[in-house]
Amino acid sequence: MELGEKPHDYGHFWRDGRSGGNRPVSAAGHPAPAVGLLENTTLFAVYGRGFAIAPILGHLGTYSDIRAMATDTAMWVPKIKRVNGGKGVVIAIDLIYGMAIPYKGAANCLEYLDQSDSDPADKYMKPATKRGWAVILETQLGRSDPVAEVKRMMASRLRKK
Image (tube, rainbow, N blue to C red; front, side, top):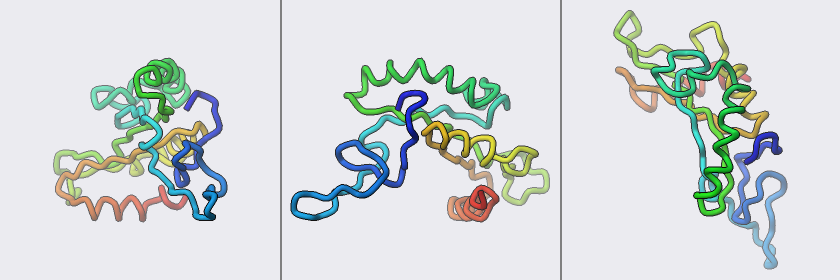
């Protein structure tokens, strides 16, 4: 996806590469099969703890904000398209949501991005969605387990936006 293009509806991708809207129907009247995001696109994800946070934890931390990321990643999209077999390109923020920390009272040894002053939904998810980008929420397990971490994300204020 080019910078400034209309955002995708990630819940509805079709085999012909279209996204969103009503599900296409075949000549026989059967709904066309939906496909996943990665079947027709390359996901170009930038990893890190957050904008201007710990650049040692990933390139995302080298950007001051989403505009700086958009400017930098825009130059990579055409380069990726030249070598990915004609697929589209979707930019993603690969965000370290739960970060393992030395034990300091947190039973699971994790510090969550939404425990700080910033709101991940407002700072990352909403702006990324407006640009047609994807967001990957990662959690390092620390002393936790995958099921507990997914449940926490689903119950957090991220879902209330």
